[in-house]
Length: 233
Image (cartoon, helix red, strand yellow):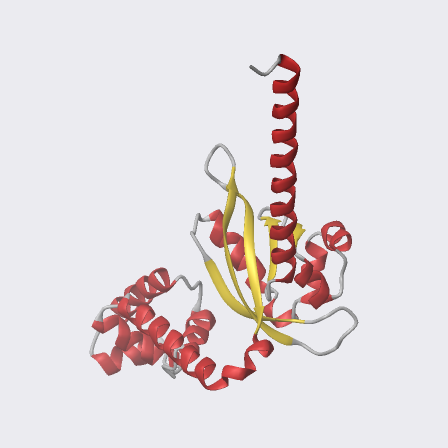
C-alpha cells in the first residue's frame, strides 16, 4: 500500500503534468490565432471600441494592441475610408436590433499609408447582458488583395452574391411595388408615376411608403441609391 505522502506526491505530479499540458495547448492556440491569415478582434458594441485583437491585425494595420485598445473608436476613424465610415454605425445598429450576423466590404489603410485596400468582414454577437442585448461582438476581416490567386472565382462569387441580394430585395415587393420602385429609381415623381400606371397619386404615395418600409430606406435618395446598387436604373 502507498503511504499518504506518496499519494500526495503522485497527485501533485499529476496536477503539474496536466497544468503543463494545458499551458502548452493554450500557447499553441494563441500562436494559431495570431498567425491565422485574418484580422480577428472583439469589440464593445455600444462604444465601438476594440478590447482584444490578434497579431495579424496589428501587423496589417501598423498599430500595437495597446494603442488599438487605448484609441477606442478613434482607431476605426483612422483606418477606415471616409466613404465607408457609415458601415460601422450600420453594423452597430444591426446588433442593437439583435441581428445574428453582419457582413460587408470596406476600405482600410495601414498606419502612415495613403493607399486603401479592400477587406471583407463578418461579425457575430459574442457576449450578452442580462436583458439579452449584445455587449461584445467578435469580428473577422480578410484582405481581398491576398486572394488575387483566385481572381476569376472572386468575380464570379461577387456576381452570385449580388444577384441573390438583388433577388432578395425585389422579392420583398409586390409586382405593383416593383413597377413603382423602378420608375421612382429612374427619377419619376409621384404624379408622373400615377399617370404612367393609371393610378391615383394617393395610391402611389401609399405604395412608396410601403416600399420604403420594406426596403428599410428613409427617403428618395436612399431609394435611388439602393436601386442603383441592384441595377434597376
